[in-house]
Length: 186
Length: 192
Image (cartoon, rainbow over all chains, first blue to last red; front, side, top):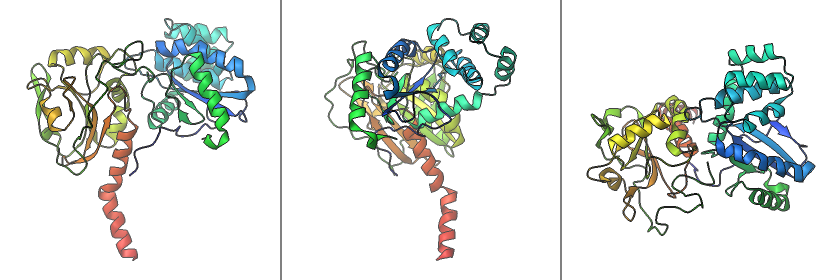
């Protein structure tokens, strides 16, 4: 049995993921995050800036890793993002919990759903029926399998990023991965 | 969180001594030493209570790591997956039972935390997982089979949360080493 080696993303990025940027981008950055985690909240504007600077050179993917026992509203927020995704508004909803981490109760999520123009009735029914609970758990378990042990954890071209998540660290690691080329692509 | 894992301060420095002489934790194939430790101020847990079940022993340095992505918190989230493999989790540190009780409640830890408190680190020492220079348990994992034999063990750098993937892979490969594997071997024997 082989239990060593650097953690790699399992499963790799697929059509089931929420992705920003072209699939042909030389670098794919994956974040495992929790909408109620303050460190993820701090990383959010950094990731946006990375994305702004790199444009089509980067594909960004977000997977859920809610630590529900310490962050009681994280699961619902993740499912809300999925429900918005079903209405093609994942990224609009994704921003709102990170920008309003002290307002993640159900009524707050409803306000966000309204604000981004969702079919709110469908949104509520889907959340109440836990339609996206399995998707969020699947994301979480993929994170566990990939060696995520807390949030946020980033993967750059499939390899776990061991550095910090300040702008300089992320840009540096992404540039290094771009130079290493697609052989490291997973 | 990953970048600033437990027991690392805001500037990324570990509170623990970094020059460690190589440890030798108990390895696969060894019968796990039995023990009885307090899980709460008035309850005691013995390893032998869990015979017939797989047991994950997670030694860790201390309660109250100042991050959300703490190792014990993660294992609480992953616990249903461990249970699918008939495994329970026991966390062990040198903290006292009252400290464990407060920590479990605060972090909503879903499994027992055992106090290796008196004699201090006595159980950790028997597993080769005591960090003499710091007076705490190492961050060491042991997966035991249904007979209390160590199937897999892993010593993590003290500042690095080892996550749950190694444990899950060990439990998964045990599936193959259980009754199913015997059936496979029988099938192969018939085929040849």
